[in-house]
Amino acid sequence: DQQVKQNSPSLSVQEGRISILNCDYTNSMFDYFLWYKKYPAEGPTFLISISSIKDKNEDGRFTVFLNKSAKHLSLHIVPSQPGDSAVYFCAASAQEYGNKLVFGAGTILRVKS
Amino acid sequence: GAGVSQTPSNKVTEKGKYVELRCDPISGHTALYWYRQSLGQGPEFLIYFQGTGAADDSGLPNDRFFAVRPEGSVSTLKIQRTERGDSAVYLCASSSQGGMEREQFFGPGTRLTVL
Image (cartoon, rainbow over all chains, first blue to last red; front, side):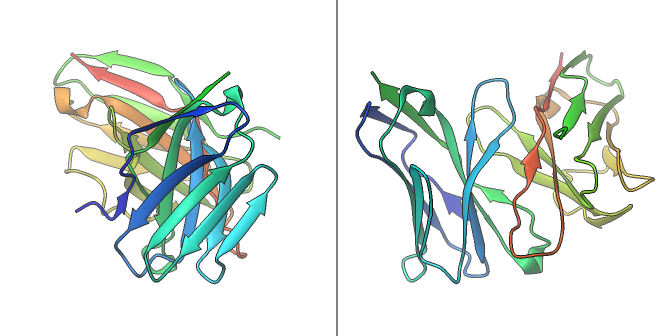
């Protein structure tokens, strides 16, 4: 069963506008959530994370929102830049599971200039 | 400092052969993870080391897969009698355990192709 779901396989956004990537999870044991960005032929690069004790974390143009009651998180990128075009993975972990990451299938973001 | 490195970057082998994939974690990171990524999917957990011991190998698909980390640093993922279904990108990640942040830092991966 897919414990972490990214229901949008792809997203296209105009440069300068906001990109919103969504992620849903099912396992209430997850207590830490991460977003990774991946370019072709490279490994995933850590972007931003959030603990379950928070509902928002911001780092420059990137903000992650967590809604625990809905088991939903989202990544906002403002303003979007062409260099943001990549595959974005949502991941979740739980201390009880040794912090191994459970990934979604990814969303391809394309930022058009 | 140096990030996670993996060798080889690409490996092509024939069905039935044995392969070894190597991971050099970030210096000082005690936790090391192996993941496998198939086309169109996110990485899937294989095995986790804390120091030299395998703390969780629940993601290994079968007994053809084995991994070691004898000195608590470099790790080797070993696949016996490879099958075409083993073709994927094998990713290694490391993290420093302890503290509030639990980010894992990934290497570039080894693309394994079994013909």
